Length: 205
Ligand code: 5GP
Image 1 (tube, rainbow, N blue to C red):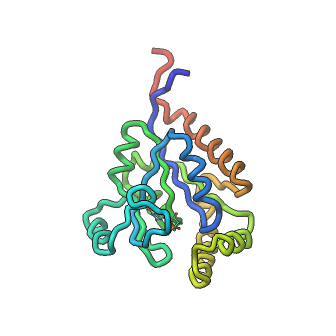
Image 2: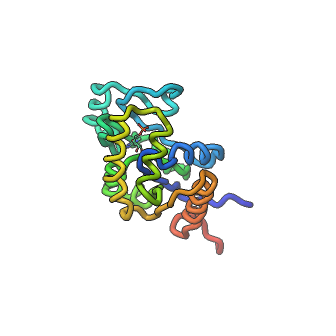
Image 3: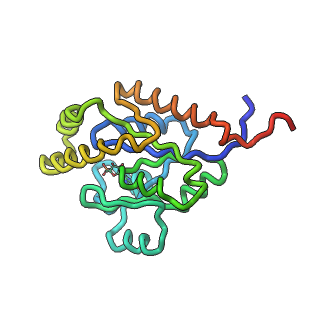
């Protein structure tokens, strides 16, 4: 098939902790047909996480300097730490027609929707990955065992707040098996890539 020139799409994925977002992201990243935007954070790396690939791990001072310099497309405090998306990386990719995936929380998503960059507004496709019930998260977080009981309690409180925002997203993907989540997300990607407003060619000329 001939590749059709088109504008890059900003796939924004949000989900409460424990909804299966990391598994979904890993599945998506098996196909290199988009760029994943590596976020900055002030939280400590978890075992196995790699600086520059999972996150850019920054000190609070360094993060705040970047906020002051206007380097973030969005940033938020989540679970007591800063998280943010670098504006330049996203814009550079979109401008050359590369799709970008950002994995951010609901506060960050609201900031992206309110952006004054028309390119970003037009590029945006926001998706909320949501369990059918909060108890699904409770079980998954306990089973994961990477957080202390206090951290789990904090994440569940945050999850409830985040789940209230699901209707602000264009798409809601209700979680099923990892395979179903991946297939659902891929279907959204395919549909967004076919939107006529994104295609930059004239079949009649
Ligand atoms: P975790 O610490 O488990 O990797 O991520 C915690 C939360 O922070 C997740 O909901 C994740 O989506 C969110 N997050 C990760 N990167 C960013 C970012 O760049 N901006 C915002 N606003 N949230 C982020």
